[in-house]
Amino acid sequence: METGAGTWSLDESDYHKITEHLNGLLVESNARCALLVDRTGQLLANVGDQLSFDPTAFASLTAADFSANDQLAKMIGEPEFASLFHQGEKESMYLADVARKVILVVLFDQRTTVGMVRLRVKQTVTDLTQVFEEMFSRSRGQEGDAQAGGLLAGADDEIDQLFAD
Amino acid sequence: MSMINYASREINCKLVYYGPGLGGKTTNLEHVYGKVNPDARGKMVSLATETERTLFFDFLPVDLGTIRGFKTRFHLYTVPGQVYYNASRKLILKGVDGVVFVADSQVERMEANIEAMQNLYDNMAEYGYDLTKIPFVVQYNKRDLPNASPVSDLEEQLNPGWPVEDAERQQATPDPYVEGRMLIEHVDGTWIERAPYFESVAITGDGVFETLRAVAKSVLKTLS
Image: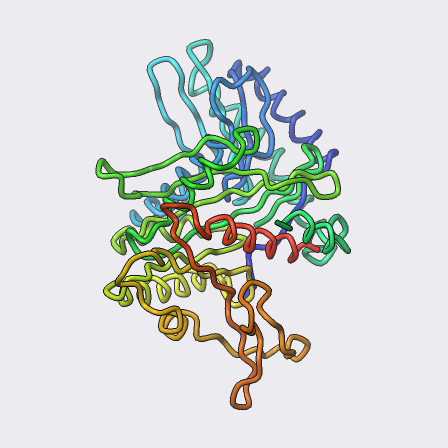
């Protein structure tokens, strides 16, 4: 049995690769912005237009939205819904699963169409899946928490100090 | 699942407040929201019914300081207390790094506490998580009420301890938060471990930050 959810890390070169793919997606699809959120609701990256809302809250709701829809899928006998589309009057969003670990969210308006977004997202999901699979196999290679241990190893005193009254 | 983001220099961790309905989980978050410097917290999101019962979750991100140049960001979630929302309760536990069980101290809520605790163990197990191996803290809330059960009764029912099988951990460990109490001890030939507990009155804020600090610290220690 796993003891808990484990740890993983995102380094700057991963981040760079991810934003490159997201920027490419925006150019090709003419969407407004793209966000990447992990399944626990943490925002990993966002590119495109400046966001007019709180991205942290948005990320937690995105993960909840996806989780709830996963359960709905199971109820109707589907293993999952790999993508979701929410249509608004002016603004719409398209969400797609990446490697069962993260969610790609694309916000777009009338300058493009859902068909175009869906088409371009497909390629980006393939590209990002590769990035994440490499990232996760690397963390597994380092035996789970080694990366985190590298950062906080020996930080016990600092942690005690942080929480001292 | 804690996530270390080297690009934004943040350590992100997820904490979940679990417990029976109307026990004070949302009140814990509201107190934190009210007391933390606005620069150190985000927006509080509540997915609640019209009568303010939590439907899906409440969410509050807070920064608890910096370690080794990394901001420690904790995402606090509550689950709906009512059992018929179990599907959404379970979803919130996905990727959890630390759990606070908020018990309602009132005598007549003992059954509800026990049921919620059992439900927490079951839901964690469904994800393959072992509650006895992750940061876990119990909060006995509503200590100010005249019908509050003695802490010893609550402990007996909700936090009786679990056997410690790992030989390395079989050593007497005092509870840093409650004088004279042991977190790990040898009882009748078996090593037993219990979760730390805190007494609270969430509505006035008593014990709220003590609980949060304890679980957050324990989560960071698992990374060190």
